[in-house]
Amino acid sequence: MLKQIDHCGKPFMIGDEDAVDNVAVERSRRSEALERQAQREIRELEHAKAVAGPAGVNPDIEGLKR
Image (tube, rainbow, N blue to C red; front, side, top):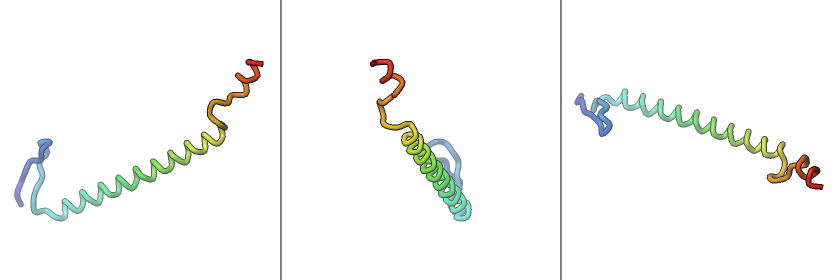
């Protein structure tokens, strides 16, 4: 194995495929979790918009203008 330093100054080893695979698996798991979180937040936002009604329409303010 060969010890190297990346462009950020973080050391890493060349030739340790298991460590590289573990890092890739962990990154993949993290990206999947972030994707699920993003989808959940999008659904919550769409639900909130549906509950709130059309944008720019506030019945309380409309009643005051009359």
